[in-house]
Length: 251
Image 1 (tube, one colour):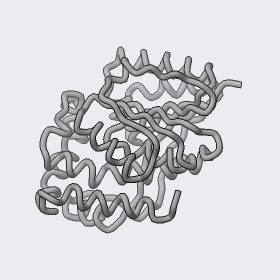
Image 2 (cartoon, one colour; image 1 turned 135 degrees about the vertical axis):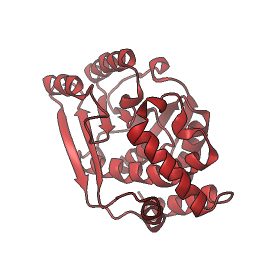
Image 3 (cartoon, rainbow, N blue to C red; image 1 turned 30 degrees about the horizontal axis):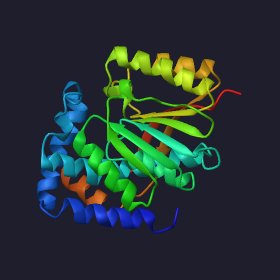
Image 4 (tube, rainbow, N blue to C red; image 1 turned 180 degrees about the vertical axis):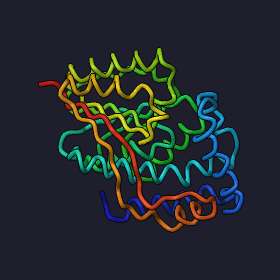
């Protein structure tokens, strides 16, 4: 990716989300949003994380860049650049994680899917701003046709933990099939086990199929805006953490 792509995107994020809100208003919303993720996770599936302009701005300005930099670092560690030509991003949110991987894969095409119309609009803006060929659409994960093939990466980043148990089981079966048909699969989630009680069963399947499970800690210094928001909201961001499951295509 061009060296200034991420910087230009971050500057555009500032301009986009601070046009009608002050940093103090975004900080207050970020406190409420982080509380929702830590203490009220049952409300996330109902849309509580993005139920106001302040929370949406906080998510885009704070969590979006974290997901971008964490996904980019994971893609580099897994050496995805030479093997991915198309990214299918399930539960794409603002598009940050999928966009980071598409950029690392030398401008792979990207398709994003999310149930939240605001997130889909934001993802499409992200793709345009980063000059990626792709489109996000409003769709629930069970309705998305994966169309697996060699060169396709099925991505579920910070997504599976928000699905119901039945839909988690269904998605696991579908990613197994995608791998068998030549696609690769990457699942990224928070490192905390409390949010991911389903993780051991998924990890067992990934191991059985020859994939890998990783816990990641990246000493990445966030940009000034994100550091300022974190400090004002009382959040620690000394490092970016995530855990992942990666399935290469079946041979």
